[in-house]
Image (cartoon, rainbow, N blue to C red; front, side, top):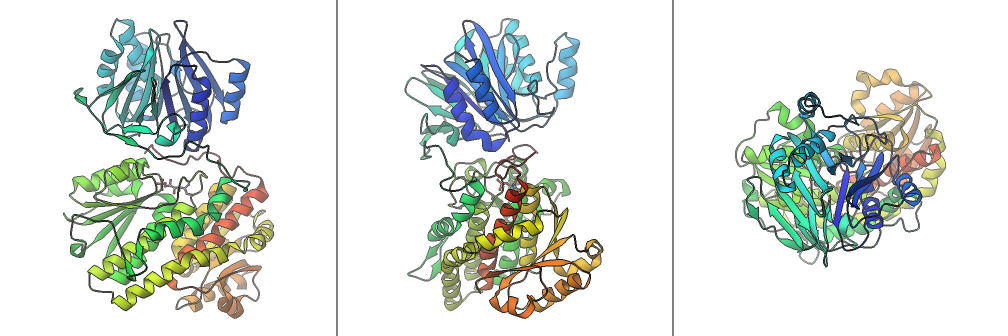
Length: 607
Ligand code: M6R
């Protein structure tokens, strides 16, 4: 949720810390700050708002020093003001934190009772005081951190700077990601390998409960029992080049346009075109023995899971339970030992999904993970890792990660159906053929961009928008509504088309646009009946369908968007494109911050 970086360097660090923050800004962007040790004192620069404000601050008042830490924030406790921005500091220590210290209130009261003064409303500041207190009493940095960590409940990745130890940083992680980067005579800490990519490719991933002392010479890692441990150093392979928008105005537009390529790239790892077969990575459990699947995810990844539920049940006849991750653990789900629990995540770090994964592991489930970041916590904890190959997704609104997830989930459903004896070689060949056609059909869908842009002004003035769909198009309606609300701030709801008459129809008037997702097929007539119920009440409809569907039901619609006629299996991959483009152009028409919408962050690493 927040992004952190630290450098113990040979040279000045402020510019490099700022560059690292630019690469981490997707994690949070409501304030930012840096701190270093210089001439025996801790110095800080912090600024409210986007990183550009901190950059100005650093120009006005440069920050000297060769050891430093930096942070970009997504506020949890305390408003996004300068005084709540990290690093939080005392005279002796400064620290940055990603996560939530859940027991901060009693700790704060305890510290206040001992005469400590607080400058912020954050949960984080208690950690600075706890460490500082011990250091002031003569403890070494290592002793202080070792004593404080067991007192913290919740989730954290920390990087801590010490006034009297200008060549050292201490990092710690529990529940939030933290990596160590090894350079030439320099050592780094970062929330992810992307942040450190221009500095080094040599990365060690800390395990849960690990803490680490870094100096210029390297890193000494300890586990949660304070036993020195080695963590493997791997080459991250992440490009050091700054991720850019290409010819597009926003990352979101670039990522929508990348979809045919990245979906094709993803499918290449799961389809054997020559053999007309779907292929999965090796696994050391019997997929054919899976009797029930539990899918858990958040947001857009959850909607990908909802679509996949249709596929697992239709093709493989395996029953599926599906939950949003934040509800999963708390309803104490009944999980038969040996069941398959499937987690879907772009980042692989979403705190709710990760906690759900660990709950499922404790309940003796086999853990399968569909994830875009192959070095993420979820990827590392999977029994079956099913990577998507979408490449870094920077826009907060998930687009290409979603369609790549769908591609992987379709392959998994087909594979499961085959091993369950429910898919003949001819049927499998048909699936392989249609999946291979998806990138071209997505390209066709992209060719409607200008029309969609032209109709965005019809939606932009609305206060409320409804999305309707049936069957697998219902989750697409949910996804459409999520896309629109998160980037345009228009209230939007996705509904199962047939459910509309049980309540939402009361909302219909000529000021509430209704987006109907209705490809030709067995459910078309029924969805169109629901659409006509909307039109009979003066509702303004945008129909997304194929030529046949539009010919049959397009009259009387405010607008239509014509998609190519495709096999039902790839409908969600193709129809995602107009749904994303519509949300994008409405947001642009409204002038909102498309890539960094208010109150959101790309990676939600707090529960
Ligand atoms: O990284 P994850 O896929 O686990 O993230 C899940 C959600 O936070 C994410 O899909 C969110 O809903 C997006 N902003 C939607 O566009």
